[in-house]
Length: 209
Image (cartoon, rainbow, N blue to C red):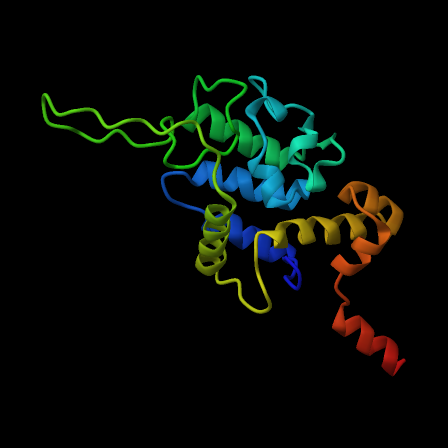
């Protein structure tokens, strides 16, 4: 999303602490895939279980061409340990016995995520929803709730804040290497520059110096 900002390290910690509810493990895994792997929300929600897990977390996330922006190129990238642990906890707890070809992040209305409700004897059974991935708009609502509960305010916040956070961290950890950051982002140097936000305090210090 154009104009949204990245999260600080302390805001990421606050957001993770704020995730709760019956599908907290799913939401934590989704948040970390965006923040620690830099995936766009559409890419994250397009993943199948086999793209990140085969009974244990894979060392790399597989990105099929069908889910990448423009559908022009697939690939893979390292799976950060935090995201790997969150995916493992989510699948082992909320999705035991799930098939490899199922969406990684299921809609709460899908049959394996829906809570079992008591029903009267002889009552007709409601049809089960198919295995559907979470919709991007539902993902945004989850992120919005997380930001609100964590008290994260100021600037524009969106699901794309996860990808911008990833960009900022890689840029910092590579010594501000734009080429390396672009490679990690699977993007161009020009796009990376547009993602990075100037540190106003550093700018003002430079002007005054």
